[in-house]
Length: 277
Image 1 (cartoon, rainbow, N blue to C red):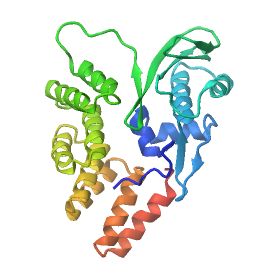
Image 2 (cartoon, rainbow, N blue to C red; image 1 turned 180 degrees about the horizontal axis):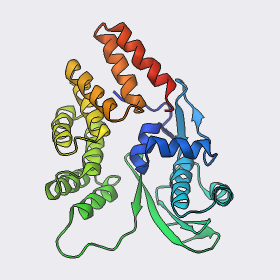
Image 3 (cartoon, rainbow, N blue to C red; image 1 turned 45 degrees about the vertical axis):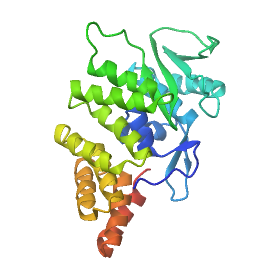
C-alpha cells in the first residue's frame, strides 16, 4: 500500500510525479536548483504543498523554454507570493509568459507580470488531488481518446462516476493510454474497489508493459487483496523498470517482512531511506 499522506494539505513525491507528469529525476533536479523547498515528513520523506506543485510545474515549463535559472527563481518568488496555501475550489489559471508568471482565478482577476512566449494551463481540484489541464483546441470529428481523458480529468471533482466512464471510453479508443489507466486506477483505489483495480491493472501492464507505475498499481491492488506473492512480483517489476520508485521499495520491504524475509525487507527499507521521497 502507498504510504498515507500525514497531512491532507501535502503530497508525497510519487503523488506529485503522477499529478504533474514529471519524472523523479526532474523533480529532484528542480529541488536541487532551489526552485522549491519541500518539508520532510515522519519518515524523512519529502512533503510538497499546493504552492510547491504550482512552482514545480511552472519552473519546468520555463526551463523547457530555455529561460535562465536566475530569471526563473525571480519569477517563481513573485508567483509564490500570489499563491494561496491550498487550492481554491474555483481553480486557478497559471500563465507563464517568458520569464514572468501571471495568476488569475476563474472570476477573471489577474495578478501578474508581463513578457513574451505565452504558455498556460488550468488547475482544478479533483478528489483530494490536483489536475493540471493543458488548454487545447477541441479535437475535430468524433471524440478522441485524449478528449475523453481530459473530460475525465475535468469531471473527477464534481462527478467521479462520469469521470470513470470517460476514462473507460478513452481506454476503449486507445487501449495503451497510460494516463487513463493511472487516473482510473486512482479513482478505484480511493473507492476501495481493489478487485476492479486488479483487473484494470492486468490490462494496464499488458498494454503498457514499460510503465513502472502500472506495475506498482497492480502491486497495490494485489496487496490489498492479500495476494502477497503476486503483489511482491508486481512491485519487483516496477522497480526493475524504475529503481528510484521509493514507494515500491517501502511496500515491498513491508511485504518481505510479512513473508518472513528479513534480509529482503531490510534491503528495500534501506533503499527507501536512501531515495528522495
